[in-house]
Amino acid sequence: MAQISFKDFFKYDYRVPLLVDKVFQMNGKSNQFATKKGLFKAEKLFIEGKEYKYSKNLYKRIEALQDESNGVKLVIIKGKVSRKSEEIQMNHIEKTAEFGGQEKGKKVNLGNLFEEELHARMLECLNGKSCKGKYAKEATTIIDTLQDINGPINMELQEPIVHEGGKNQPRPLVESSGGIGILPLQAERHGEKLTDVTVHHLNNKKSYLSLKMGSTVTFMNSGVASKFFLESEMSKGEVKLKAGKSVLKTLGLNNKDFCKVFKDYGKGKVMVKNHIRQVRVPTLMNKFLETAIGSNYFMIHGKGGGIDFYHMSKSTNRSASKVQGMMTVYYGGKDGKGKRIDIEFSNQHFDFKLNIRNKQSGIYPSHMMLDYKTKSIPGKVTL
DNA sequence: CGGTTCGGCGCAGTATCTCG
DNA sequence: CGAGATACTGCGCCGAACCG
Image (cartoon, rainbow, N blue to C red; front, side):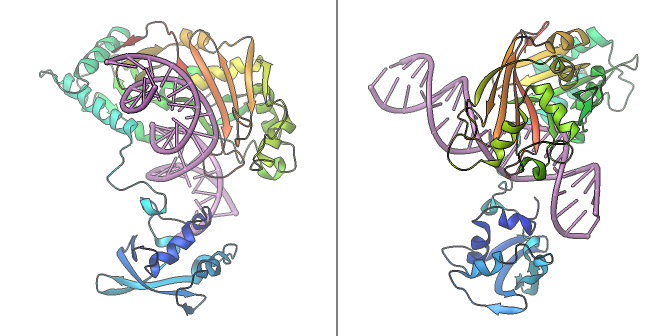
């Protein structure tokens, strides 16, 4: 669990009042805080060296320090960890569920669980013992298929099947020959980047498995805040960075309307006129999709009731990347009032949904992501 | 070294559909 | 025809890397 940075306290209006309530045990709140020093019981609150008693508007005294460069040092909470007196700063407080974090020990990330369970079962099945339990049948079929395609698995290795889902290897968005692409620019090198489980074969080939769980699945998810879409430019109504303009060109977006969505967000009405538009798919899109989809990996997609399994080969990638005809652009989401841009397009293999939005509780876009739904893929089976 | 950014993972609330 | 299931849609948390 992470700590809440000083700045994070001001991201949501409830946090500083909650902090104050907790220190003074007001409104039914407990004065206990999870901190890296242990469970901390608050007793006194000091702001800029002066002790304060509770008052209804005391939180405003803290909020006034929001923009102070050393604000974090100016608020001190004194109390005890068991019997020992301690003092902490706001940024020493852990982000518990009360402050909008994930409940410790309660929520499990199902995608990560899927990786762990399937990886463990595949290794177990490889040992030649009777292979049973959750995912046993699926693990066996996957192993068979991989051996058919890439040859026998190398059993001499200490770990013939490696779980490397935690590596989060970057696949950044870049400008490329007038359009955009995802690095590395050769599609077939994406398998090694996005792999969650890697299977090693005797001939030194590797099978890269991409594991996904749930109904929302994503091909790419790149940060765009610092290299493409600067808030400083967008708030003035136009993206100026060349790289940013290349993104807009590739996606068939209107620069001014794009900015207006975020600039005018929050007024409770549609930001741009005719916010739903039919646009011809720019040719640049195909090249972008080749690297966004990538190739040389196997997709294993659990949807709770069947696991889709298919090979994203070079040839499948090529046909999956071709989109022609029209696409639908939603400035401000489906209803035109959201802080996002959505673009929908399709081909025989996928329904694509691309969005540009903020994923870090802000307004101006921080990320661009490409979600998809699978239609028909050559060789796709449901395990 | 503390704050910010990026890429990982879907999540959760609401609307719509379906079926006994 | 109402409740449970499913789909749709806008949005979020986390750890690691990065950076000044």
